Length: 379
Image 1: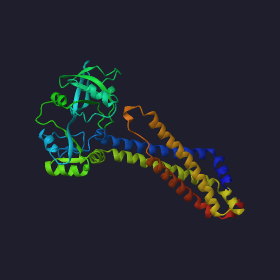
Image 2 (image 1 turned 45 degrees about the horizontal axis):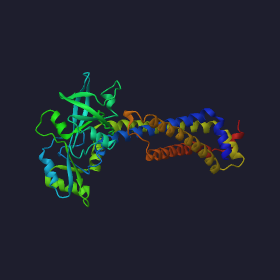
Image 3 (image 1 turned 30 degrees about the vertical axis):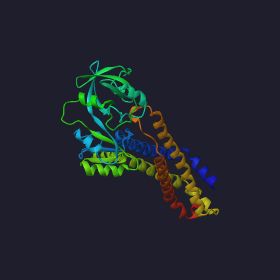
Image 4 (image 1 turned 135 degrees about the vertical axis):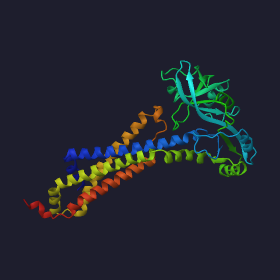
């Protein structure tokens, strides 16, 4: 019976290919948009995730995410260090700035100042080289993934001089930071250099990065810091999640991608249901002949389900392959950094496609199951 079902399906190549390509396009739309959406949310957490050493972030109570800091008093650093359970506490500056290259071109950048001694806050990529490069006076290390936004002509940024707030700086090295939602080039300096070249303000400390002593959990330490200092203290995971929540609650991204993913599901439903219905309608006499010679309704249902699952499997494979190719060939594009095809997306898309093709096949075949086999003998 299955062999007959496959011959019936592949005998009509137009509908067979239409079903497979339609499901493939819908799968591509669903999985690609979902992967991009997850990647964008990850960008909101990356400013925190890139600082691997910090177990607790301390900030002004008004801060909602890492790219919108409120300056703290320098005394906050010492107050945090006095809390029981703190192994170390380091200052961290993060803020927007403008970099002027030697040829006069301007570029908005995210300026990060890391602790002079420990250099906590530098990304882990080529950490030793970046640490040596940043030691000089007004030396900056630039993220190589976004350096082209500062030097669009493709020149090697190392060795270039520039100005930040009328202060001359020299790019002495490169590192690789995680892509952030702001999308600005990221430059790193020593903390004292960063606060000395930024506009004069009474307070400039953005965050205090904290490590917990052995035996003290980051969550417990964060609670102690809040109780003793009155500042907001979040664990690394909590603050990373806050960056994701900020994107979800304050942008139209979830709605936009939700609509795109919903359209993918709708396309799959419409194409699968209509094409299967047309296919079965055009083969009513063939199904009637099968019923007339003794084929049971259960066998016919198995035949139609087999046809639907086959085109669903082929279409799903085409769609997943297209998404995987998109991510693979775009892996070196800075604007696509951090995008990946998670197994949950793969499994979720498979379940959606299976439900759609199964439901479409079942509702399409009901007419055949109720059909009188005598129809085949009528003119």
